[in-house]
Image 1 (cartoon, rainbow, N blue to C red):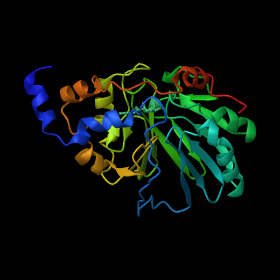
Image 2 (image 1 turned 180 degrees about the vertical axis):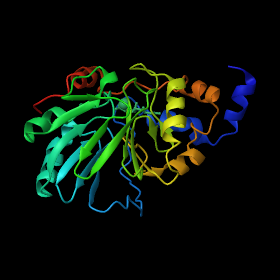
Image 3 (image 1 turned 135 degrees about the vertical axis):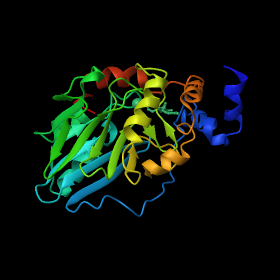
Image 4 (image 1 turned 45 degrees about the vertical axis):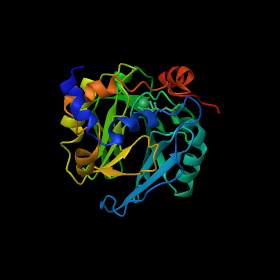
Length: 277
Ligand SMILES: N[C@@H](CCC(=O)N[C@@H](CSS)C(=O)NCC(=O)O)C(=O)O
Ligand SMILES: [Fe+2]
C-alpha cells in the first residue's frame, strides 16, 4: 500500500473505515442497535403492499411485497427465526405467498425459505443460479419475479458473493440490495468468493446507475438505518466514494471476525434452509 493511497483515507471521517470494524461485531452478539430511523417516502406505486420486517439477532431486514388486488406476495430474505412471524403476517393480510427469494446464500443466519415453504404450501424458493444453492427456481440477471401486476427485476451484483442479486421493483422506485450495498457501508468480501473489485464494479455500474431517488433497502443494518436512496449513497457512503484502488485496500483490511453462525448457516442455506425450527 503506497503512502499516496493511504493519505486520502486518513482525511476521511472516522466512519469511512471505522464503520467496518463496528459492523463486524465482537464475535459475540452482533453490534446491532435497537434504534431505527423512519423514511417519509415510499414507492408511489398504487396497489402495492410493502412491509419492512426486522430480525434482531442477525440484524436482517426481510421485505414483504404484494399486490393488493391479486393478493400475490413475495418475501425477500426471510430468516428462520422469524419465519413464523412472516407466515402469520401473510395470513393476516389475506395474501398468497408465491415466492420466498434470497438475495444470496447468507452466511450469518439460516434462511426462512425452507420453513416458509412448509408452512405456506405453494410458496416457491428463489435464489441466483450462481449461488450454488438449491431452490425451486434459480435465476440470473434479467429474470423477473412476478406478483400480481408488479415484478422485481434481477440485477447480478457479485462481489460479496458470486451469487448476489439486487431486486429492483418494476418502476425502479425501490432496490433490494442484499449485502452488496448497505446503508453507508457494503458487504464484506473476505469469504464466499468475495471480491472487492467485483463489488465496486457491481455497485457503481449496476446500483449507482439506477435513478437517484430509487430507495435502497439492504439485507442488514447494524446502526439503526432503515432505508436510503441511490443519490444519498453515491454522496455519503464512506466506502463507495473512494476510488476503486482505495476501496479494495479498505475491504482487504477490515479484519472482521467471522459471523457467529457461518459454520452451520452456509451449509444449511446451500440446501434452502431447514424445514423445522
Ligand atoms: N457480527 C455479525 C456478522 C456481521 C457481518 O459480517 N455482516 C456481513 C453481512 S452478513 S454475511 C457484512 O458484510 N458486513 C459488512 C461489514 O462491513 O461489516 C454476526 O456474527 O452475525
Ligand atoms: Fe451475506
